[in-house]
Amino acid sequence: MTEPVKQLTVEDLFEQHGERLDLEWVAGVHGGGMIIRPERGLHSAIIPTENNPGGRAGSKASRKRSPDADNKSLVGYLNLIHPHQIQVLGKVELSYFTGLRDISRQDALQQLFNDKPACIIVTENTTVPTALKRKCNEKNIPLFSSNLSSVVLTESLHYYLTNLFADRLTLHGVFMEVMAIGVLISGPSGIGKSELAMELITRGHRLVADDAPQFSRIAPDIINGTCPESLQDFLEVRGLGVINVRELFGDSAIKSNKYLRLITRLEPMANEQLLKLDRLEGSYRMRNILGLDVPEITLPVAPGRNLAVLLECAARNHILRTSGYNAADDFTERQQEFIEQNSNK
Image (tube, rainbow, N blue to C red; front, side, top):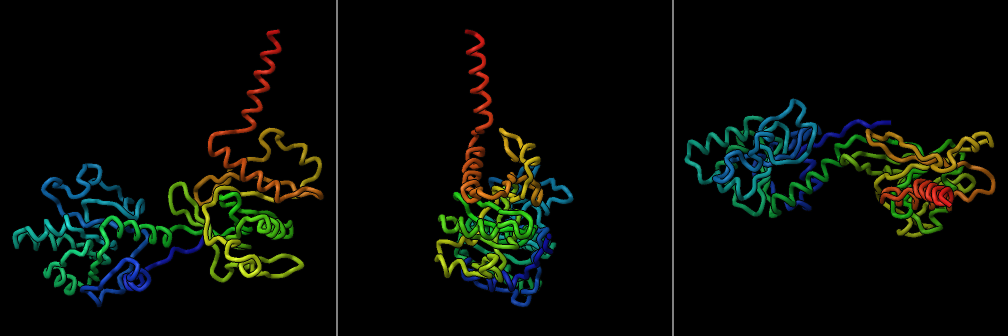
């Protein structure tokens, strides 16, 4: 189930991250209701410099934008002003701005406010120009100052907004950290997912979320898994009911989030189905989650099978695969070499 994209006002941003980002509200106090939309991004205000007339990114590629360019990145240095974005002004931009003639400075201010940015942040403990304060009060555009550098501030905002606005998907299963990688244990209800999770916890692995873990794609190759606040620390085990893993096993048994690297599906199989499994590769295949292919392995559930050991082995084997080693390929090559050596005798 995909969740709706969240919205954020400038006032929310200030209340939630103002202290962490060392923000001081300088002007435009009536513009706190401005909305930062997910299709917009964080971009440095582009004021040309002596060595770079096009601004921080003066290449032709940066000046040519496709119609959906705003949907591709939350952060970057462009030389066009976009609406509904956070404008970051560092020493380079303000140094150029204060050195302009009065008429040119007014033109630069007009360009900056033409598209009504969500807010403006002056970084690196730089003195905020009076003209900028006056214009922000006039246009009701929130203006902040921060002692942080432009790079640190932009990276922090990028990380926060990327996580906030990322597409979210809720999947049924138990999400755990096993052998230092994120593993989703899936399968039909009553198959034993929670019991397996409990055994893994006793073996030193950590629980992220039970029943309804939430996943969001925060980078082209990264899906982050978290637990809904109402379900944090809890695990439902049939026969025991709901237990608090943190209270039973301590803080070390809980992980707040983990990147999804592997899906293991528990599935009961008859003998006929077991015979159809690939003896070399097993049931290794790819499953598309939020547009990213994630490896999925099916573990047959049957009496006498130690699923905890099998899952640990599956996680270790996946780590080997990602490092470039495939046991099936190695086995095949060895057998081929053995056949060739004996055929030459």
